[in-house]
Length: 158
Image 1 (cartoon, rainbow, N blue to C red):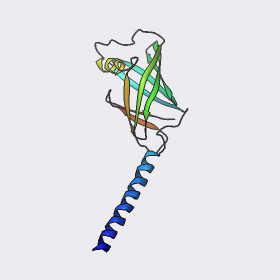
Image 2: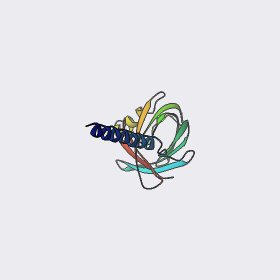
Image 3: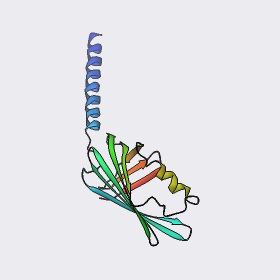
């Protein structure tokens, strides 16, 4: 009986060590982004008979980051830069806080009454807002994340 108990204790110790190694491995996995490397995406939003072209950039330089946005519709364009700080980062999630917003103009390029979806997404980019980005693993150097508060998926290429 004593031998069975010793075997059980040794098995429990080995399982605990194995579990601790897996936890350490999961914690030390690399960040999902390359520090100080610009990521870019481009999108077209169809609004009635017009198309708004949006180019977005993200550069993360710990402990802060900058999101830059260029919106172009017809002959009008609007530039915006959002300064954010990294509140919490891990392999699977990033929490960011909006610290600064600079825009070339406060005029909108579209009628918000007919494009409520874009208005909703801009409401979260206010000073002090905290956004949660769930990181989606990829096989490439692209950074893909899901903005929980905005219900948006973004993939950006380096």
